[in-house]
Image (tube, rainbow, N blue to C red; front, side):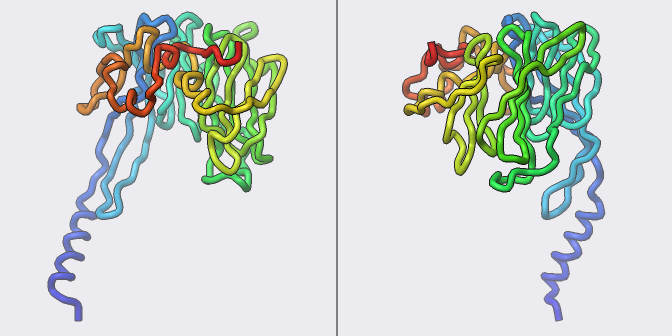
Length: 289
């Protein structure tokens, strides 16, 4: 016979589960400076959440919009149409007139900043997963070049390579121009190091194991690794990032609101990077000159 205490616990769990209701939620994510440091963009994720005691909760009806605000975090306004899913990455290429938003293992959207129109959606083109890869998902990332004239579309493939396509706009349409394969079943970092070269940190047995420099027309070269050489090169991926050219960072604070602070005030960051300097948060690096 079950003890009275156990029966009470079961009844409480059933009652809690039966009372759970779907609740509308919002969450700010991925604040970034525009490429000219004159504005700030961020993502507002919206979803419905229901708590399932004691295992956690369920989420449904995920969508998000992109908002812009000024450098004083005042005057927010919605700039995009509602997009399906959630988003964790954002680039605001103000000079080129578009935003890139998305999630590393799902898809990325290209949005016109003037009209809010969805221009293109980038999704993984392989459904199969490389057998050597950890995890049951395909990785994808879209990173604009310094001036926004090109997009590097990086994705993992089922043949255990990393596919890198460079896209450009032609007559109002974005199209892939050149594509290169990089060895590796995944990647854990990528950044433009100048106007026509991309640095990629690749994964084989482990991540950050090999590094490749990919030129938009000349192809792929493996880099001889030295300790910490990639830290300043991969710290920010392009001209639009969470830290501006003066070292002012924008972030979501403990109250889940936008805030700003000097990156030099981040004691944890400075402790983990004893050689930290201005080169880290400025796009590109001089390792390959």
